[in-house]
Amino acid sequence: MGRANDQVEALLQEYADLIAIRGEEAFKARAYEKAARAVGGYPQDVSTLDAKALLEIPNVGKSVADKIVEYLRTGRMSVVEKARTSVPAGVRELIAIPGLGPRKAMLLHEELGISTVDQLVDAIHQERLRDLKGFGERTEENILRGISVLQHAGEGRILVSAAMDIAEQLVAELSEIPGCVRCTYAGSLRRMKETIGDVDILVAARRSAPFMEALAGLPHTAEVIAMGRKKTSVRTVTGLQVDLRVLPPASWGAGLQYFTGSKAHNIRTRELAVRHGLKLSEYGLFDAESGESITSETEEAIYERLGLPWIPPTLREDRGEIAAGLRGELPELVTEKDIRGDLHTHTDLTDGLAPLEDMIAAAAARGYAYYAVTDHAPNLYMQRMTDEKILAQRERVRALDGAHREMRLLHGTELNIGPDGSLDWPDEFLADFDICVASVHSHFNQSRRELTRRLIRACENPYVAVIGHPTTRRIGKRPGIDADFDEVFKACARAGTALEINAHPERLDLRDEDILRAKEYGVKFAVNSDAHATTHLPYMRYGLATAQRGWLTTDDVINTWPLTRLRRFLRKKGA
Ligand code: DGT
Ligand code: CA
Ligand code: CA
Ligand code: ZN
Image 1 (tube, rainbow, N blue to C red):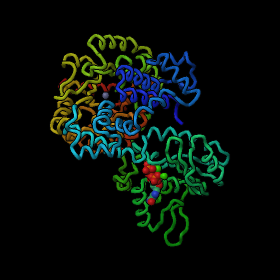
Image 2: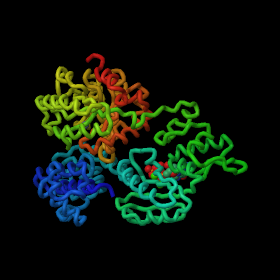
Image 3: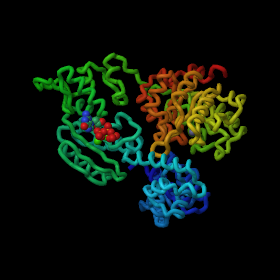
């Protein structure tokens, strides 16, 4: 399931972790980590490549290529399996905790005999960690916070992107089956929530058995949980549950509306039906007294009969969409077609995987009218950026600006917001960029006051047009920073600084709820892929869905604007 690249990436990353846990050469762990990311972001499917072609992947040398070949042939990577046996499984679990790296995890195992998350929590409550070298009260707090993020993620939910990959394949396969009138995914995936509990697939057909049998027999299906005439549930090889429901074509609209949810939205629509003397169920809309069927074939007809316009699934969370719909005041949501460009992307000059030319060509292929290259600035020391390098890149960007006639290039940078809110370069230097994105990449655990001041100072800089991934959270891995975001939103609105909706499925930062709040203050937004590879540019769809879940229109999103209006925004007042 998914691309072979993803599986190889996961194995190589695990190998890097195992090397790091065992305290072997740090450079070796880093080399495997780099190779893992390179394979994950490589545009071609590795399973179609031979040993020689594999060597063309950046950061992949002979020994990594051999391991990939072995995996493609046998489905195993023997060095990884061997390394697993030398590290207790519990310790491997520990390193997944945000705030606890391989070195600390191994130390806890060796010094305190800790090899499970529960033992770790006990040890923290007994205050046994703070006496170890490199640990303190602050570390204890951070580890506890990390564990709660991890456990929240561990409630069996997966990233929307991972669920989407599987759902789109399933829909494609089920649609091929004779007798299929309609097929789509519903549930939280259709609403594009950031994480998905299970995938709900709907089929409209007169006979259900062929679909149930097909699902049960698919290669990705590891286990059939339940199989019936109306519904079949299976578990995939990756552990994800899929519920398939087959509906009679005549009740497609009612079924789709019901199984799209959310539950809270459904309760509201049912209440509304009752007030009209009707009864709404997954089978249709009925007259409450006579039981006579009123309509069921399309969602539009059902909403219309309730006095509502069709409500986009991304709004169906009971956040006021019914009241707004009744007043005729639903927002005209921004769509992916409205996006004219990407304003936060990287190349292999810093930690991106693809050369400038490839990123630009991939962006042009998406039909963008403009595209910003924003590699990391010098204070992210690992990236070794210099004045000379960024200026040389600017020359190349200017030279390439004629290569794709329809698309203009912007030269920018992603600055680092220092602990005190200062930035990598002086204002005179920043003035010559077309766009500056500024983001927090370190010192996540400052006090609330410090973090708030820090972000506000950055957004008040006259050359900073966008705050990148504002909370820095990583879903299931790292909580967002604890700043007073209402103050930050106010400052952004005042200073004319946009907030990013980072579209990377692991970030989706700002979140939908933050967006709704920020919009109240009059903040503008930029939906950006933060692509580090050509394959990341399509992440835009997840950022876009998040923007919709935050009720945004094109007026709210600066990268839907024509270039002249965008440029006016980027040249802030005071700059
Ligand atoms: P998930 O799977 O946790 O990410 O979230 P959903 O929203 O996909 O929830 P799921 O799979 O349990 O159910 C799919 C939809 O079916 C849900 O959004 C609304 C509908 N539904 C399920 N159970 C109920 C219920 O007890 N009452 C109502 N009104 N609707 C329900
Ligand atoms: Ca679901
Ligand atoms: Ca379900
Ligand atoms: Zn960043």
